[in-house]
Length: 266
Image (cartoon, rainbow, N blue to C red; front, side, top):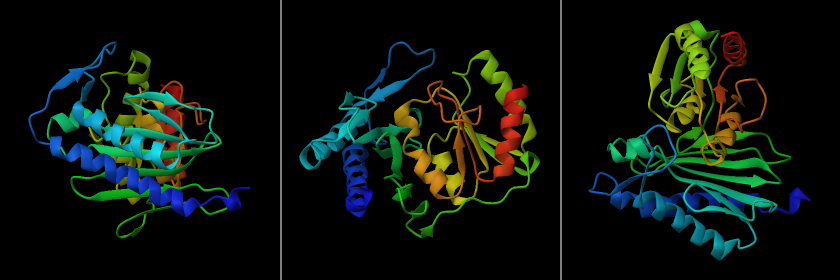
C-alpha cells in the first residue's frame, strides 16, 4: 500500500543526495581537472573525477540508509534494478559545460517506484538552485523551487515558441532532418543547456525541448519536474519508449501536438 510509504522522507533524502553530490563536485568546478573521453562515442564525451566523486557520495548515502533500494548510475552502473525502489543518478548532467566552466551543468536525482518515476530533482549547486518534481501515487502532480511552485506557460503554437536542445552533433541524419523542421518552425532556438533547459521549461521560460541520444539517467529526474509543473514529456512518437534516446518535452499541449506532427512528417 502506497499510503504506508514515507514519501516526505524519501523526498528529503533525495535532497540529501543532491547536496552530497554537490559538495563532492564543487571543489573541482573551475579548477584544474583531468578529463577523460569515454570510449565508443562519435562525439567527445568527457568524464572527470568530479563525476565519479559525486556519484560515489550518493551511492554511499543510499547504501547506508536504504540498502535494499536499487541504483542506476551513469558512472558506476546498475545494482538491484528490479527493486521496488530504484534511485537513478547522474552526478553531472552536462559535463561538457562543466569542463568549460559554464554553470549550466546539474545534478540529477530520481526515484523510481515499481518502474515509474515518482520523485525528480534538477540541482545546480554552484548557483544554489534546486528544482523538484513529484508524481507520487494518490497525490496531485507538483513541482517547485526555492521561491514557490513551478508552472509551465501557455503558448499558442510553434511560431511563438522558444526551443532548446543540448546539441545535434550526435543526431542521425534522419533525426537531424526532423529536428531541423522543428527548429525552423519556432521563434527562438537556444542550444547547450542540458537538463537546465528542462528546469526553465518547468519555470515557464522555454516552451519545447527536443533531444536525442539520452540515457535512462539523463531522463528519469526530468519527468517529475516537467510533468509536475504541468508539462508533457514523451518520445518523438508521443509515447513513453525512451530506448531510442529521443525526448520531446513541452509546456503547452498545443505546442506538443504541433511538434509531434512536424517530427513525424519530416
